[in-house]
Amino acid sequence: MMNAMFPFPFSSLLPGPWRVLGLMSGTSADGTDAVLVEIDPNAYASGQPFRSLLGHLHQPYPSELQTEVLLAAADELKPSLLCKLQTRLGEAHALAGRSLIQNLGVEPHFASLHGQTVQHWPGQGATLQLADPYPLSEALGCPVVWDLRRRDMAVGGQGAPLVPLTELWLHGRQAPWAALNLGGIANITLWDGESLMAWDLGPAMSLLDLAAQRWLKLPFDPDGQHATGMAEAACLERWLTHPYFQRRPPKSTGRETFGQAWLAAENAILEGLTLEDRLATLAAFSAEACAREIGRWGLALPPGTPLLLSGGGALHLRLRQELTQRLPDFQIRLDLRFPSGAREAVSWALLGAASAAGIPGNLPQATGARSPVVLGSWTL
Image (cartoon, rainbow, N blue to C red; front, top):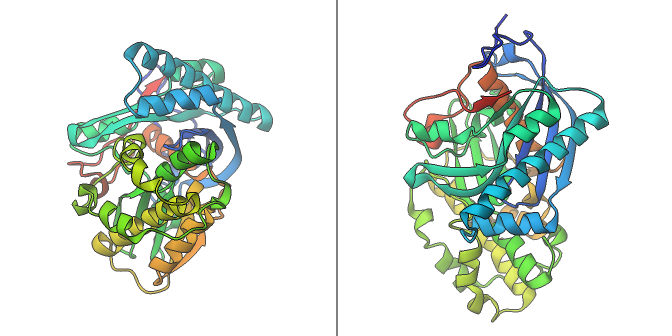
């Protein structure tokens, strides 16, 4: 049996299984996803540590909190407001975590906190995820592991993507597969039966959600129901010359590249199109970026390999249609193993449990790190 070593005054947890609370807030900045999962720490060696999902809860951010997060992501929030935002996000995550475990009537052994990414500068070895872990620890009465990305950066990595190993732990090694997460940013994990490869492809829902907020006055376009127009081919070709798409993986990106400033720069051209054409063009851009990146840089996978879609973009009908047209060699289907929004939180719980077990959570060939490292900081 494995003893989980913690950097604070107790030496081990029970040998397992562990109940781990995973907390994730993605680049869409729509709220907190909380999951409680059961993990066997002794099964990391066999590659199958996940046992079961005990529960999931999505807690939306109040509109003013989401506005502040988006301002921080656009680099428009002064330090005093960032300081207060850190606390408010910690309290929001504590509310989501406490609500879930009260609903379930089951206490976690510890929590794994992603926080809200507001800045990500991998070229400078810098990233910032806000959410004070101390209100969470106080509200739950358990240890919290947090700030998992910066350890990877300290050894030369980009701090992202960190989900590749969790996808391998969830999907297994038996046959080739691909997992495409369509959050604010699209990231892909490819497994050919021997090798694992992962990177950020470009925008998924970041631009579409900002467009919905600007032109529909909605936080997002439900099911992509307004993206019914024609994609503007000239826009697509110009956008796809962006320097990000010319770089070879490992690489990662965020709203700093494909966010408010990008949309503002394209505003005049987009407003020359009908509303339906604007949204259709942005959906086609996300899909074409994904397809070109996979085709240019990805592992060679057998025709018919399943491509499992997760994240909010998996529910966007136009985006799915565009992906299906552009990736005909894959069997594209929804990843229905977990409720919508739960998957990344499950991944974060697995990474937190790996940290508790002293197991590295990064994949150097995906992040560019010099070595595998155990991720995160711990607080009581």
